[in-house]
Image (cartoon, rainbow, N blue to C red; front, side, top):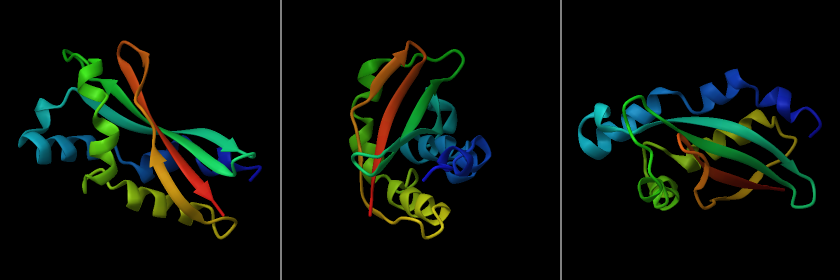
Length: 130
């Protein structure tokens, strides 16, 4: 587990959660990708040795000319956890493949939305390993 930053570099994170997925999500939700207020990017936040878990963030970056407000993002963990376009279950399976047999993902959960700054909100993704 010493080389996780190397495994989950920016290129891998972009492949795991492609930039176009946000547009696909808004297309499914509103019928128009242009209605979306944010782009979604996956980031790696580290390995918790005590809990034997991986931490990621789904970062919601405000789109130009849009407003990323708290009431828009606080209900998203519930929506993201079951929306087929966001596909957290599939994302976790793809993350497990990147571990190349060194660990398995036994469970996952999305945490509460955190406002990092006015134009950036983050949804924590915790993945339990075995």
